[in-house]
Length: 315
Ligand code: RIB
Ligand code: CA
Image 1 (cartoon, rainbow, N blue to C red):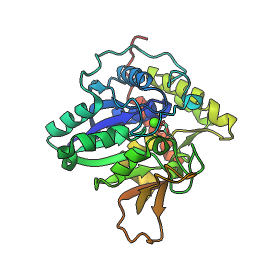
Image 2 (cartoon, protein in one colour; image 1 turned 120 degrees about the vertical axis):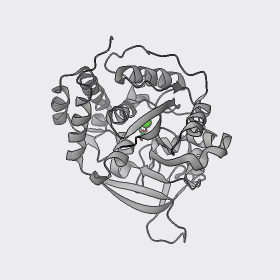
Image 3 (spheres, protein in one colour; image 1 turned 90 degrees about the horizontal axis):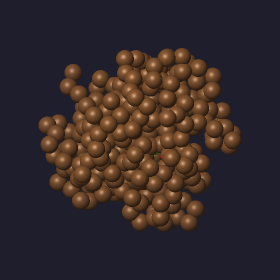
């Protein structure tokens, strides 16, 4: 089976890290690059976290530092969810490779330009790097096969009543992406808040008994801390949906819709406005992922973690 070349772009972030577990474990993907973006924490923190996650999982692709801040707004971080480091909880290995000398946007363009087949970008943070790639290197656009994102929500927000964090952080970047014409798959809060991992799932993860599973169990136990305080009955592990909706679309419900990004609204800036009634008169530009079989999600996490049964690194 020909593997799909992918770029992992994110702001790790506990759920970004678990998304990368799924990506590394999948036999369908050839990970060509990992790029960090400011979001859950500052770019310095998300970049070292990305490098440490790659060392833990054995992702030997180059890692490049991405955008320091959103395109126009001031950066907002989510330390309440992810802690001061952005990946609080279990100890992690030190990076096992140097940071790429290229900035994220140039590494992305290089990978796409050199790829023999179209590249899929899996972006689980603010969409700043993707937008800046399309601005700085328009010539590679036709070789981007698909962009799969965690972001937005067609019914509600989580950082404002209308906007989800990744899109709230950089709506201008999302606008560029949603108007690019590139095939786009959006895993918004509608599905990702149903990708919830509950405390009674945690022993099954920890019981797998390998180093990566132990660390993922530790990430879940930390990541659950804040949502528990605000009334969730588990940890909404958002980002893996952007990977699994590519590798296992059968466990999701999806609908093609026209979606636009609100840039001006006093209360709605960053909202992903989905046209369910056709009033825009515009053709769908996004495949919206709207629901998930949660039990299969947990089963697939256990299956993915067993891919690391023979791996242990020095910490
Ligand atoms: O709103 C959830 C999203 O914001 C996730 O990608 C999480 O990692 C944060 O980036
Ligand atoms: Ca993220």
